[in-house]
Amino acid sequence: MKNILTFICIVFASYIDLYAQQGGSNYSMFGIGDIRQSIGAGYDGLAGTQQAVQSYHAVNLANPAMWSAAKLTRLQIGFRFTQTAINQKSLSSAQNFGKLDGMAATFQVDTSMGLTISGGIHPYSIVQYSVSVPVIPSFPGLTELSGNTLSYGQGGLSAAFFGASCKPTPSLSIGIAGLGLFGTINKVVQTELYSQPFISVNQKTDRFSGSGIKFGLAWQPQDNLTIGFSSALYSVLNYTSDFRQSTLNSGGIAYDTIFNGKGTIDLPSYYGLGISYQVYRWMFAIDGSLQDFSTIAYSQGKSTFRSSKKFSVGIARLPSYQLGLPFDERIQFNFGAGYQELYYSYGGQNIDEYFGSIGMNIPIAGSAMIDFALQAGIRGKSAIVEEQFLRFGFSVSAGEQWFKPFPRE
Image (cartoon, rainbow, N blue to C red; front, side, top):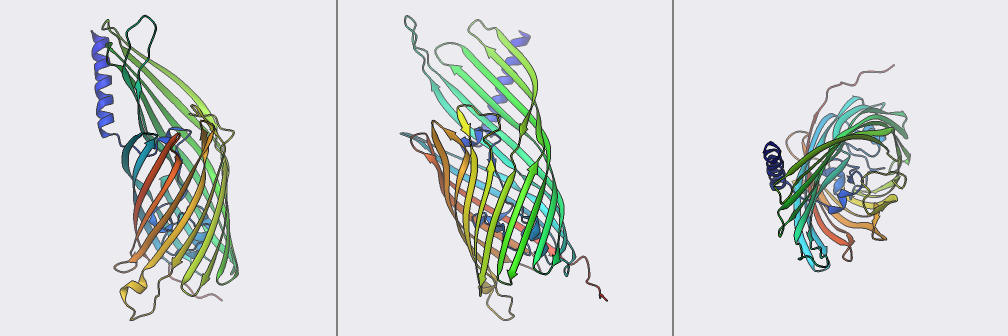
């Protein structure tokens, strides 16, 4: 009786979890989930293009050398909402979820040297999926069984960073940051047979810890041209696992077993390269990045892992700071488009993503800024699973001068 009550509590808790569960990309069930390389809407409006894009208010995650462009000490916080329409042949569903998009700060110490300190915390990867599959096995001599298997997961990795940038020469900026990776990924597989009293719940929780270091360079051979490069190197990512298996069969007998384990992941290095060019009030930028996941072996399922490549372009109409101009002239308008080869293949087919973006950077009272961005795109193929998505993000930042310039001899 005690075992049955325990099992009922587990199932009830899982149903509560499911009720609160929101779905995102079902492809995030593979590996460590969807990788996030930017924070806030400032760069999202440019399709994430940022390797060589300076901003005095948005914190650049990809290239720490860009922090040297900051003019004030600033605090930034953001939020991101995703709506996904999932199609598989004649089947379709809709899922959505929202998530805090991190918090970061820059501390401008010396504007002449570009000496800036930055730190914060942001999502590194996101796991958010919900998949329902009917179970209709048939066995000769037995009545047909029917049921349903529900798989859902949530969590991901977070990254805390702290670093600094400076300008050793007027045309060269360098930056470095230390990274701390941590997080939890929860995955549940629940199977219920309708024609037979049988329920099975398998729940796996993985807790991660690791570290890394990120480097960045930015070179301006002329005032309106910037070339940026960045690289991130990671230590082994350690994780511990709790696996709980619970079943209730037709005889009213419940089983509840817990297993513990641990493992490691060789998180691959990241490399990015970008160029930006400014003509009057227009900025044009292009990025490319590479991260090879083909050697990792974690939550692979029926997928195979490969190198992830991303290419994006961004165009911005820059604001004017002249006095007396109308308010709309002080707004920055962003446009972008991107293509990404995601780091997994399924059913022998590569899973790729295509998307476009628009955004605005709107100044408000004092030095505060609100950024908005909307991304729309498609990933996967209808023969497997096709996902059409809308990603809406906004971020708010505010700043003030903490360190006063001083005369130099």
